[in-house]
Length: 142
Image (cartoon, rainbow, N blue to C red; front, side):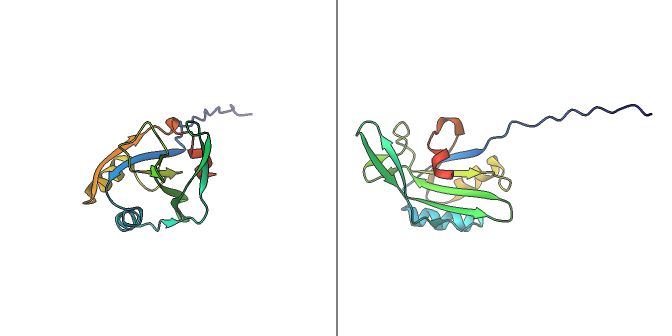
């Protein structure tokens, strides 16, 4: 009988979400069009809105968002405006106008994506964030 081979399986730590903050004066429909053109995707406004409890106001607040799922690469894109109806989704980041969230990203390398976003004429700045700082993502992407 032959010698038994032993294999070690190591998995890279997987980041389930990539979060990019975008500063721009564009309206949501204009930014959506620009992103669709630049990235070759089809973000569309969702009919449903998600609601979050705003502790300072002690009320629920509804936020609308855009989404697209790339069936071929299984990547999901979400675009959400940080400020809606005078409320900030992320109050500690008032300089961010929109958050672009990618789930299961197998299609866009982070550095190249940031470079592409910065090439869009009306975008002032793009920031990359650690997904663990955003507790709303599970709700948005479930």
